[in-house]
Image (cartoon, rainbow, N blue to C red):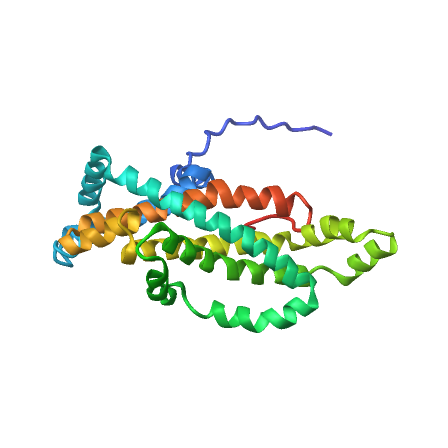
Amino acid sequence: MSVQTTAKTSRPDPPRRTGTSAAARWRALRRRPLVTTLFPFAVVIAVWAVVAELGVFPSAFFVGPATVADSLLTSVQRGILPAYIVDSLTRLAVGTGVGLLVGVALGFLIGLNRHARRFSWPLLLFFQAIGDIAWLPIVIIWFGFSLTSVTVVIVYTVVFPLIISIVAGLDAIPTNLLRAASSLGASRWRMFWEVYVPGALPGLSSGVRTGLGYGWRALIAAEIIIGTSGVGFMMFDARRQGDVSHVFVGMAVLGVLWYMTDALVLAPLEKETVERWGLVEGIGR
């Protein structure tokens, strides 16, 4: 019996698929956090530039990103924009700080005391429906065109969503968990710190995010109406002068500041509280 062997002929390597490798590189690039963050903004800016270049709207009402960038650079060089940003952030910090103290205290009181909830819940729903702008006329009469008026409006805006979110978080605590802690002999103080506080963290975190967002909008509205400085005042003053580019500068600054606040403060706060206590698997999934 003869065995025939065939020599293996060497075959040339198949040609590389340039398109496939390029697509793979693009997918890998898209996974990078910086690219993922900046790519949507690049698309919006490109569309914005095209619309401005085509002259779809008159230049007196709609300017391109290059003009806005020039106005931004001029405001920074003159020191106007940095000073206004500091004023706005200071007002937001003061109003939000007071609002958090009041909202957290009232949220746990109303959420844990059925008599307080029965009395205050209709009032919460009533006053939450009254927007912060509706309070500005009476606040101006009470406190004038002052920092107090702005602070009062921000506190009012922050408190109500925070209270309601905390109460919702407390209501979401499983009853079996409360019964288990009580059967193990947990005191009221330990029950509060080891059961109620961790259980309310998802609602508290959501309330802080929502309240701070509403407070930011209330700040800009107050600065537009009664402010003498700040980003909102800069936008309103530019509108009176017919300077559309500085209105766009203010809008861009507001968006960037809020994005930085969310990414550098609120998201880490959620990860260090909600996820750390093991109540949820992850944020933003």
